[in-house]
Amino acid sequence: MDRSSADAFVYAKASGMLAKSFVGPRAASLFAVNSLHELWSLVFQTEVPVIPEMLLAEKIEQEAEAAFLNDYISLLNNYSRPQSLLVNLLRFYDYDNLKDIGASLCTANLTGEIPELPHLAKIGRYSMLNYEAWPDLKLITSGSTVEWYNDVPDFSKQQELDTKLDLQHIRELWDSALHLKGGARQPVLDLLQEEIVMYNIVWALRLRVYYHMDAEEIYPSLVTVKPLENLREIKKDPLAGPAVKILSLPTDSYAEWSTWKYASLLNPNEEGVVWNVDPRWIQQAAKVAIQKKALRQFHRYPFTPHVLFCWFKIKQYELDCIRTAAEGLRLEVSKEQAKDFAGIVS
Picture 1 (cartoon, helix red, strand yellow):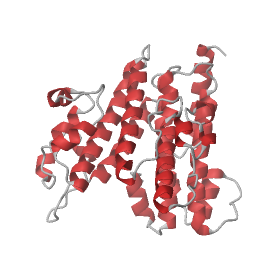
Picture 2 (cartoon, rainbow, N blue to C red):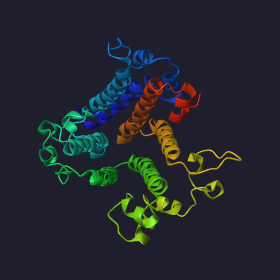
Picture 3 (spheres, rainbow, N blue to C red):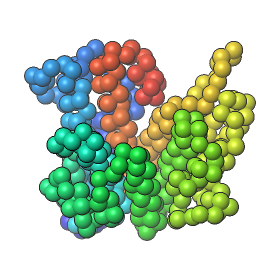
Picture 4 (cartoon, rainbow, N blue to C red):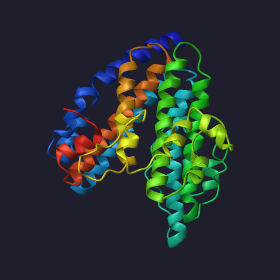
């Protein structure tokens, strides 16, 4: 199938998949069920597996993830040479798997026990890692863009290496988006830039609020379009600059934050109640905003890479909603609380 034919087929197929997805108004139905058994039947429309209730939530999350990845791969397979951006989107799961592999091997080193292979998100032939080499970390990453990750991390270094993996993956996404051609290039860059900016903002706030790090300690961990060390350049960087600006705002003054460009993402301020900026609230609100923007743009640039880029973001959010619904039922959280956390408005 030539590229133009593949573009047309993928657009039609992806549109059909979205019509059946739990996105937009249909997302609320995930939070209307009363049990994990009902949630399974709603999402998969198959017989509920005979396993203990306490394991069913995890099974729902794993099956939903596998279905999402399989659908995306089936769309990607229509191209003989998929755009690198579309492959790099999928490799988010390689990076996530590698973090879990590192954590499992690190734990085994601490306890002296045999390392347990963690659950892996499978992306088939698009993977850059050799999972068959488990538990040899050096062989797992050999020949990939993360072959530098070849020693089991000490517990004290694990977070640092996880952050380095995040930075590398995001920069690879940005670089591959820059190499797109045609009319879809700019809308992809705009949506991706917004997502990376929010990643930087949330990460900076987490480091500041939870770890009490000062601005100078936070700057080096922000994603920039290219490696930068000069603070003046970081402030001007289109990806990191907005995060630098908020580091000077007091975390307990809603008035100071109310004029912020992204004030609509802030946790609510109730009169008479002490307010502090909440990174988790902002992170979830940003996910909802990105998903809504992707939904609006999905049909705007048909027959371009923007279709699959938007589809991936929309379906990732759907997966988050399924996970939230499953965890809410497992922990016996009220339907309204779970729905609010997911950003679903009835």
